[in-house]
Image 1 (cartoon, rainbow, N blue to C red):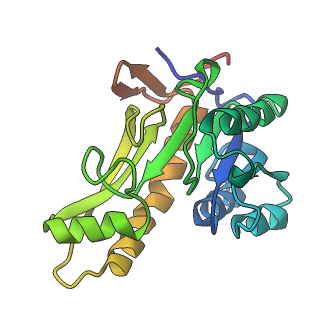
Image 2: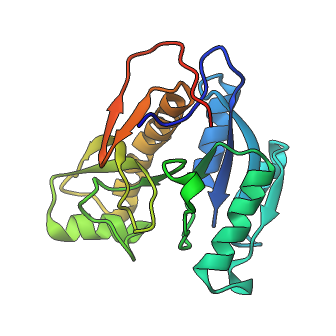
Length: 223
């Protein structure tokens, strides 16, 4: 099935960005939008943490932001329901997870409308508990020669949904988790905007677990 986006002649794709911490992914997306390289309309930033540094990036860019505090719920179902209710009220068409560390239960109307980026090559070094420097330490401990990042549609399992694109990074003999993380993040900063742009242009088609990237064309997909 085609993923629903916008055509090149239509207005920008309305997105919400979910954060839990420093918001480095959000900052990158904001910068790409300013450079004219990301055809989106930031409708909302939602943080699971009232102290998240990423809220400052939203404020600086004048993006509306709210906190849905995980500590007030401790239950993924009502926590997720509030998040998606906010997204519906803002007519969000794509939800972008940017360092969002809480379990999200995705409702049927947002199937293939939530994206995530993982700092490894799924299905390796992924799943519950694999986040941040833990991922890169696991790569080094295993002795892998390559790693990278994966942009995928999120479903209701950790790091499991259909893969949109991946980028490969070499693992160097003298790498530490920090140096490897920095090199992977450089690729994340390119891969995530690219994947979101493909969706915005209506060029992403999902068939089961497989994602096809369609050639450039003016296509309008209703949401």
